[in-house]
Image (cartoon, rainbow, N blue to C red; front, side, top):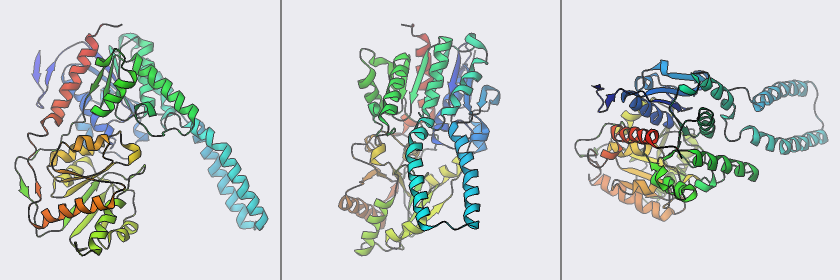
Length: 463
């Protein structure tokens, strides 16, 4: 029986049951959440029995209840909390000891040579503690979720409950959970890489200790080899995975892009010439992400007289950066930081006339920020601060409304921004139509591709 679900997908009743291991899931506000909830919805609407294994609500840092509307089936979600790590216990004890030390210091002054001795003691303790801390957080900060998640899945119906296990990462612990479940239940595994895990797939030094990198590579190889299908979210990452692990099984590697539910523009409109030009970044700036190359170039344009500090405003929405410190770099141009917003609010801000900024540092050049797909659908001009060889630029360069800023070429950045400002001043800067050139990035198209991939994985004969 088929019924129209109202979102372009068809519901086909079937008996296949899929366990989705998705640590990040609604209502958590993170890029990984959107991919997971739309894939879960697509499988459910196509008649699959879907069970989602996700993190506990108590562990979520930032939430948006409206995301629950995409997958409105709370009975299909297993929420699992992480066990306490050794590191958690250590930090608890350390906090108590630190308070005691501060109280003692108030009562008795520490002699200068004693302070030096204490400093040396702290450095020695830190050197001893570092390798233990690295192991405690290996392969990621969600390590302690492994055993509780495994126990919860095993209690959900036994070996007759799931026909296939789909696991998405990062966190890499989620891949390990999915792999362990699939092996215990003797069910096919579909593993999904949204980012490269080890240096084999392009990650640059995630684990400083060589022994940890070797262990991660061993796990990665085992998971990929045991997977019936490996899904990556960019052609570049798929190519690296195929080259590293394909052998004679290249067909098991598939690219499924991050689709976007941002409304498409039906017409092209000029930017309002009488208003400030807004350069807007949405999302936190972390792990080497910085807007300083952009701000330095803007500051240079101001000092040369090519730009008035009143012409441009830089907005950092969801940023962890201090706007006051950055404003001095930009030659008096206003730099504003705003707190994180809900997805609906972010979509609204993306659609306003603005130059949208993507920041991807060189050490993360094999990853593609999810927001790039959303930006492309708005039709706004996009500045991509990334290496020329990055996967991000490989995707963005296909769209004429995208221009690249470089991390190490100030002259090139001046040229790019100078040209952008000229088109703005002459009224040529536009929000472009996006209905045709982003057709392959719609959530419907991407979800349909994902569902067909799951069907194919289920129908494949085991080796």
